[in-house]
Amino acid sequence: MEQDLISVIVPVYKTEKYLHRCVESILMQTYKNLEIILVDDGSPDKCPKICDEYAKKDNRIKVIHKQNGGLASARNAGLDIATGCYISTVDSDDWIESQTYETTMAIMQEHNPDLIKWSYYKVSGENKKIAKKINYTSGFLYGDDKEKFLLDTLSSQAMGNNIVTCLFKREIIINKRIHIPENISMEEDLYFLTSYLLNCNNVYILPNVFLYNYFQNQQSMTKSYSDKYRDSILIAVKEMKQLLKKTNSNSENLYKAYMSRLVETIFYLIMIIEKSNKSLLEKEQELKEFIMNPDIGVYISNVLIKKYSFYKKIIFYLVKKGFYKTTFIVMNLLLFMYKLRNIQQK
Image (cartoon, rainbow, N blue to C red; front, side, top):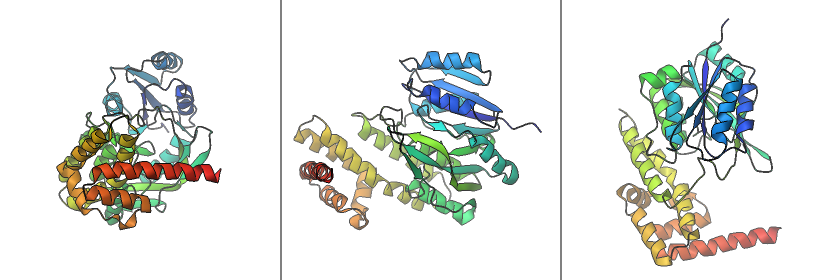
């Protein structure tokens, strides 16, 4: 019996140190009928050459060389030329287990779900693995259960707001015209997965199956932060709001779930601004402009801080009251106390 074709999209940018490990893990799959699409997103290192060398060795590999446009642009480029019945994506600094597609295609052939989602390992630079398990029972999610999974995905509660641990049906992606807006430079996975979940009927969960290795590479496409981080948050919020508004029902609850994840995002933004070389006045102005954005301001005014840690309660109390300068003074003190505690523990 002929195997269905899986298109595996690998966005590539500045990962020459890890690219061989990634590609080899795909080539070594026990499931062989693969279309491997390496998307060189204008990488300035040896990645373009490495991609071309692999294409010469294995006719299952296709290479796209394009001008740098970011992760969303790279994934869209791969989707544009994909011909497989199913779509998978792997980040070029990560790797997958050898039985990944054999395991998931066995589920697909037996149950024919619209989406398969599995758990993964988070791997540090010392190759220390931490299991990241989806907080759901094994099997199908339909109707209200699928809706709850979507809500949990939006609010970061399901340990599953990424697309590298998914197997999608290309037919649904094409028919529903699912893509990632290329002005988004953060939460690209969440946007695509949310759009897909809004347009599919069911999900099959594999919580006890760990097939993906997520490497914590601080220089990767999904981990590069700059002074534009604040603007990236605002763009992501705007695009997600527009996406969720398209739903005919429950859009308000979906948007509330998405906005609840902003607590961690805003806290991290404050940390980034605090660590910058800007003056206290400049930091105050930057945070104020961010909070005064209508989408953010409405959320901040309604956020319930009781359920968060002591540190976050302090920071968000100050932000809600508009004490932006004091926020950074306190943040700096909290960071110092955190470092001091770690030194004492050693």
